Figure (cartoon, rainbow over the protein chains, first blue to last red):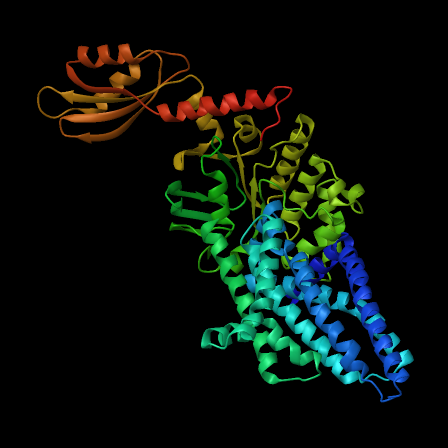
Length: 255
Length: 328
């Protein structure tokens, strides 16, 4: 436990002492801000039209603003996540510091967990930036806060899964760019797999659709907490970390 | 303290280390000498549990590198060829991180950081970013990192590589100081012969993955500095050979410093004869044997490979001593 904490602190510090964390946060704030602005604008327009036509029924902020914005955030994640985790092992391999970690009395799994947790913590911190925007909804409207929380839980779970896979990819190479691009491609693929269900309904497409992160993330945006989706993301996290562990072990044998 | 038996390491089809065995006692400073690509780094990586051996065993402080890697790692300090530093960390912060990782308790860590910073003369640099340090200081931080948890065994891979002459002298002094304290068993690798002469008690020479020689520095330099070793096989022409008499006769040859009986079998005996410096003895040896009425079966120069390596090592030193001589 102590070792996980040590590695976690070291990784998090290096995110925040280098420009990585701040750059990603700033870019995310910009992109999310734009999506949020468009969603609110659209909501406003629809609301005005509804009023002009004399139908003053209350419109659902959760349905019309929060949900699309959460969906957008999931897509932004596809870009951010590889950037967060591509360096985790690739950088240590390139600079030789991996030799320090692997000759210290620390288990591989402690190193992996420390690093992955730090990446998840950074990702969660970045998501907090978006929460600042959402607080404005509470100032001017009455959105339901529970679906929002569940939506964020979904974002963190999806982030955790993709970060675990990205961490694995980072152990495969010394080159951060390769790790990053591979991470992005895999994340994107896992996202668009869901499209197969829209153009055919063969067993293969059903399986592919089930493997897609969107299939399991979407219920969270509606505020639905389904155990099968949670289990999907948790198993993806386990798979990613397991592959990372095998890969770091084989580093020793391949050298 | 260190016991290596039949150590072999393959990378795919390349054989990096081939069946090496040696022992190092507690408190000894041993130089691991060999030209570039000899297998020094690979051997050290096996000793530090970074790489598993393909065959053979290695035990450090009584623990096997394959069976109890965590215990081994607790007892070693390791400075790889490139110091494993995080450029975005400050020196004291880095040493604290490594120390805690190596098992120094939270209560002792501040004191240990002060101690090693003092020992490695980096006290003034404590609050500097490692990325901003000069090469010499980085090397010292690397050394400080290796000794932070006061390990029994210290493994240093080319600790002076790439430093300027002044820094090289300082680093060697530092290693000598550590050795004097007596708490550490030290293995350091180098391809520079004088470095071994200055800092080590014993030398292990390897070349192309093979163990070539292991001896004290004095013996080795004595054997190497221009003297010659010859294997001589003497055979009696009639029945049993008096090997003691043959040995006495060989010792009388001018220029011979030492004669060792290697094996004797009834009518024949094998000797290893060493010459004084620059003495050519082979002709005299042959005549002495034949004139005494024995057959000379074999007369063969020994330890040629060692000489070759010696040449390579000495030439490596002059290359690095050249003004522009940064290596790698």
